[in-house]
Image (spheres, chains in turn blue, yellow):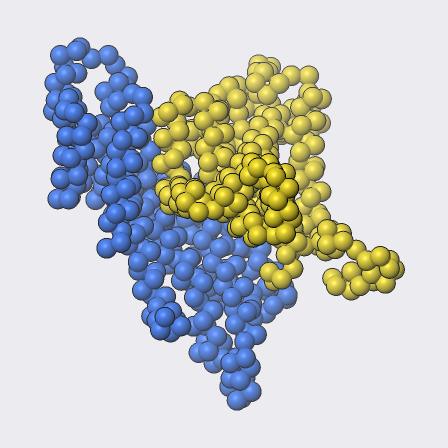
Length: 297
Length: 295
């Protein structure tokens, strides 16, 4: 519920900045006769005073109606968002799942076998994921896996798994790096704690101590990271969508803003805002479930 | 690590300054020192080597279209389909990326320290307003800010620079502000005020110089992020505009001609990846050296 004023502020700022920015949706490639321009403006209510336009937008947005897109003819903004978001979410969620499993695994392995070759190998994978940008790794994987080995298609989208593997891996890599670092750091910290020493002193096996006693508290920083990171990932990565030619939601945002597609940008902005607020709220809830110290505050 | 410092202490009765202790810790971190070497080499190559070529990266050599890799020839890594030297183009693109990275980071540090110092020293409503602005900007999607700047200023190199700085100055300004808050009630600030200095004079002469050292460790990370942001935006076509080139635009070109000539991708991609890796290790080394309690 706290999110409502934030969403309202976001919508207001976006709405007016879009209008202040020079150019308009119909000032593009070709010069239109004045009468046609007037008609087009009228059909999108752009001839009304700006306050009236803003009130109309708010009223319609409350009913999840963002109107027709100004650039993609015959599509409503809601339709474009739903189509794009389905694809982006599918890839984004899968990538975050892979990143969590692999990142937590690498981080734990590094922490348990600290300062051994295992630790250095895990650290190296994490640094590669963090430091090499996805627009370098993406095309490189296309080159090796797609062109040289011919295992998977280079780019494109038909909804089958073959087109999803490479984007999911590339999107997961930076998150793997970050999660592995977080997990290693917090696991090392937890393994030093007194209650772990107690558990060991009781004669419990190393595996039981690790997974039963240490894992629960070591995972907390990762959970805190997962919320915002998932929100960013599922709202569509423009780079991934451009490299792999995926019809996700990220590109609508960029092309919409460049074309001054007012309705599309407003719709996507509100969608982004909602996802981020929901993800933050979910993170708080999950953290409270996992960590009794937060719950009792 | 601490052995070295105690050894130094035994030798030198006067003791060592914190800065010297940090430097000793840093110089014992082999990975970080090696990364400094790699970074120096890359800078040297990007800034000095292009002067040795008798032509520029935009000159077409029609006698050698799509020349293969031949280290002994005048085009060591070959040419593209327009006869432009690939290696030279990568170096010149690197010059642009590195310049933007360093200047973006420097401007971000200056802006963030000044902003944080003013907000932290003045406190009260001004502080609340200034930091709330930072919070709002931090929670706005970065791509959205970039597109707004592009809409306002057009797609120029200036709007790219502005976008890089806007993306970078926020986090260090929070660090600088908390430092300024902790300085506000120190005796030397009271003394300056009692001596009749105005707030503006105190901020410029006392608060800002004492806040810089906190942000300076963070600044190597800023160089990394500036280079990354620049190449990311250039890759999307929102950054450096032709005929200028940077690693980002070169990688974008290379990604499109993947099938015909993978060298176009691999050469600038390798340089960018190596730069970011080295900066990453340098940042880690600096953080460990200046803030040993962190680990």
